Image (cartoon, rainbow, N blue to C red; front, side):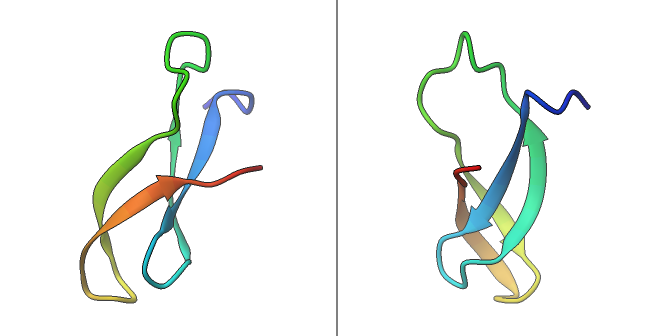
Length: 52
């Protein structure tokens, strides 16, 4: 994965960084918000893109 397109996804409940993904920063201007499984909360929680 290219380092300039790499973003971290943080759980909104427990504030842990659980996922890394890519995003095209030229075409997608708003931050990512996905519902992913958090292994510390043990359920699906909203994950938001974290600032670098």
